[in-house]
Length: 303
Image 1 (cartoon, helix red, strand yellow):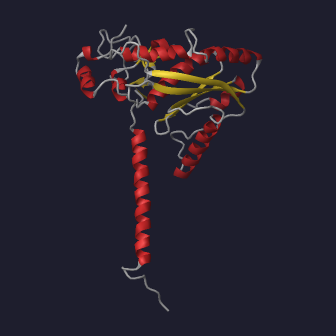
Image 2 (cartoon, one colour):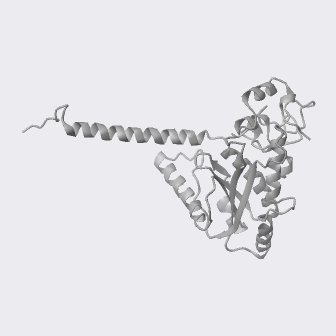
Image 3 (cartoon, rainbow, N blue to C red):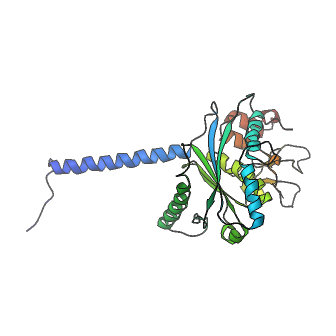
């Protein structure tokens, strides 16, 4: 006995076609949502609200316990040099190098924590690991899920969230090689820093870097070198070397031909370069192009 497909006019065939169209429409809508999220740029007519979630290990040595107390002061947005309020001010100053917006605060940080955690978060997938799509998806899901659990006790909703995970000496081997990352699609940034005095400065630098990733900026380094000219703050300075500042998305200071860039140790030495300013919407493409064509007046007003 043989079976045949229902005739073309069969109601079942029409139902299958309708269901297929619904699935395709849903997939297309999801694709458009993802693409839109990946291309999102802030509307700088309004202050961008950012939640910083500070995480610290539940157990600590006496020295690390003292650092935890300093970390609490660090989170209060006080007037000390290496605090998160200084980072808010840095964004205000950097915007002012390109446009006149006196009194406008481009970024407002709300800080919660430090919250204690036990164990280490699942490692995110890394470039070069050769993972299958399924394994990359699972690792990414587990990594994001661990951090989303940390938000359960945080009231309110925020469009931009950066997690800052401080770790003690006993966990340094776990975090070694785990770089700070950001997901523009998810509007989430992840910063890792040792629970030390130097770690707080590193956290400030990396929070700025990852937050600008969320706003649309791309990295400006090639291997261990700052990409020229986009990764240089003053590519047309004479003499060109040494540079005075580090481009925030390059995180190095070119000092001499044939020498490695100087490391960026203090966030006061970093600036937003012209290409980064264009990517995040502070200036338009025409102004960017004038600058790289040699019109330095189209660039930032530097100290």
